[in-house]
Image 1 (cartoon, rainbow, N blue to C red):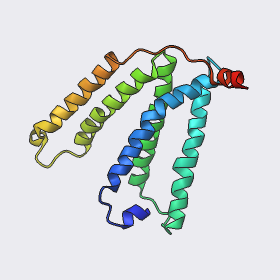
Image 2 (cartoon, rainbow, N blue to C red):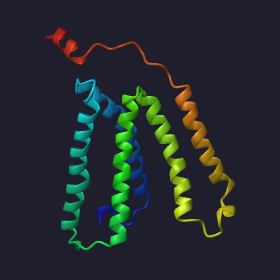
Image 3 (cartoon, rainbow, N blue to C red):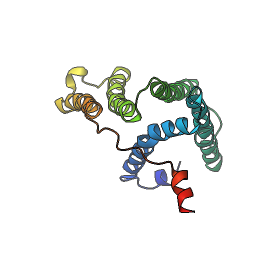
Length: 181
């Protein structure tokens, strides 16, 4: 249990949710920048993804292991929990890999990530309803929920179709720094 979970959480969950929005909101452009910075037109995206995996090792393996040790957690795991968690990690990693493949197929980060971040909540809602149906059945869904799903889909389309075009090309940072020396 983290310190925030042991106290009245209040709106702490919202802070974490917004941090996730911020982290995942920059993920695509950082990944694309890493791919380009590898300087390898053929394999740059795979080299970048290799380092994403190293970052996952640090953030998703070592950090929780340390928290579990600090909290004195048992090291027993249910089979069902392991399977669902491995499946979650697999689809997360495959999704990240598909982002790179989309970039490699000439998708621009702004368009690719707009589609992903508008489409993912829709898929999440549909799958969540299939796995955990509401007590009153699908007929009990409020119209606001259905409207929200439709608005997310329409919003993703609008952002993708009407995003601003790129501005003028910038000089490389190194060139600018060298000219000041």
